[in-house]
Length: 421
Image 1 (cartoon, rainbow, N blue to C red):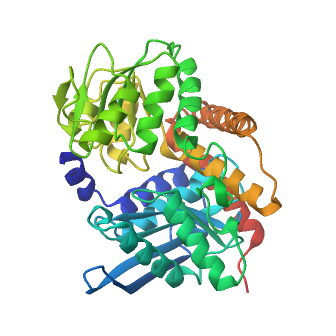
Image 2: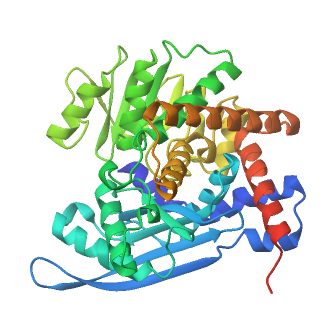
């Protein structure tokens, strides 16, 4: 659990503001615009009671934060975790604003969370908590105002409960209020794989940028949830060798390569990747430091820091997680010539296909998975090219370039709309 401890030591909101200030300075953004963009537009804190199966009442704390809505409705996931904090949710909302802007989809950024331990709750308790939380944040969410999605420890079933609860309040079905839903109630083909698919598309472009063949590349993945496990499968299918993976309990390593599907089955049976046959056991943190060509942090924020940035032995770091690299670590990796594909670009496949789902729900007309994947690839490739060109122009890393591109777009929209009244 070394990585969780490290993540707790880094305040994600301070990190997000620090990244914003670096880009704003490089852009020459006015102090007035910085004053608007460095703060969230709305922060909602709710304390709500839920009756547990043992008959006792437990009060949960939940958050919903909207960072900026100048470019469209707020968009962002909801996470359930004992480690959720308001500052974490504020940071994630800000990153969502930049993420939507960098890939050019018409959303602002939002995020939500409930402080809870979902692993200690049964399905009925999770449903009651979700529905009560939804009723508390219903004043903010809606298909044209703020559209939640799955995040850490939430899934399509949780989105179905949110959609149903909101729809009961409205008196009719509103499928477009959330994305990441089951297909049976308006979900989109390709949504579950979207984040990892986007990571693959931009990593392909990054590999071309440094003349590195993707076939045969050694890949290490920290985090083996939906994004990490799907990325392992996709990169494996692309001809890469998955040499190391980890979850919260530990990591495994095999120089000859791991079969992602077999690892998934092992995790389902044992509850962890640890103990996988014919693989060396690693500390969670060690997965970030094994010699590899591509490192994919796919867990939590703040895991690559000044303490371990010198130990990273990858040529490309593709951030499937949000905020895994601190600004100080960024500077070290850039100096060492390691190409970091920043989170707001690397993992934007999820929100892009969420946008496709929302559009399909609004028009009640659905596309096939081939069309969705093609549309996603066009957007991810175009966005990588735009970020890379800005990085070349300013002689900076891809994160600063991506932030500059995104912040400039949000600032322009904010400027054009003005301040009311």
